[in-house]
Length: 361
Ligand SMILES: Cc1ncc(COP(=O)(O)O)c(C=O)c1O
Image (tube, rainbow, N blue to C red; front, side):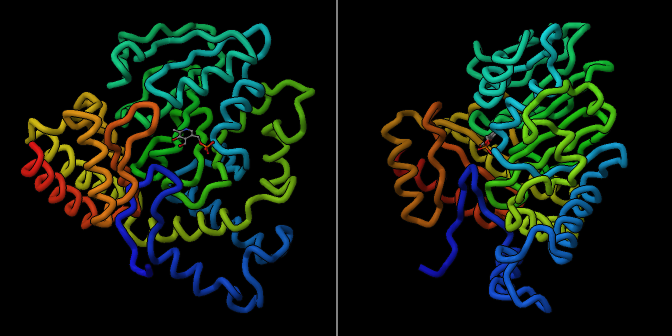
């Protein structure tokens, strides 16, 4: 098969075609360099320019102020579940965690190994269908940081506005909605995100960290687990994922050429609206998340039975609509519609849903 299908995978996920084409064109030899990005030293002048472009591209798109560092690490967002508390939760301190889904639970599990945690809110009882309101938060005044997951990829639940945490640093796992809309970086102490949804391939993790927080890091951490190592060495302490960083630089250029995050947000909202409207208009499909917490990246819904869900995903796959099976932990359907996912794919899914309901409803 040489034709591309509509790829609704939650991650690794669809990348912009112009990015893939450029990477393919320059695979054997980056113009004027005579080798591919994968084959060159991470200490070469060419790679220095590439990592510089990725850094500047992200700074420009997200409006990252000068007092924040941009790091390209490895170990996935999952390693950040540990690095955040190891660096910022001292033995005698407490951190607040707000749990709105499965990834927040995983972050919490690792943080508990490090120190004392206050669960400021958990939406588990309702089955993770929404984010809490400000009045539902039980924040501790002495917290070293407050951790949220801006978009829960599995449940399809997204914060529309950051919680108010006063002067406590807000730490966010933004793996599945980074670059999908504009955010105020100043509201955060640290943001981390695996690249493999909206930024590039797997194997590279973005960390954006405010400079003054580095002073709070305890001595004695393992070198690779200490954010200061990566700040001081500009993400080149050891060999980074050079290819991943290269693709991020191309994705940033693609987003910028399209008009930046305001345009991305408009397009993402439009795509999500089409799908949620189709769900709401039917008595057959049932959306998982409450309307005001619905993700614009991962649209989650159920059919009347698991049997029908199985039939739905297998028939959809046969029609070139791939990756719609919900995460194994919650079941149902999940349509991941990241930045690079085309509008035509969403309209194709909506038509398929209508036809499927007509035949099986
Ligand atoms: C919100 C969120 N956090 C963390 C992770 C884990 O990321 P990684 O596989 O990069 O460790 C994922 C992966 O899908 C995710 O969606």
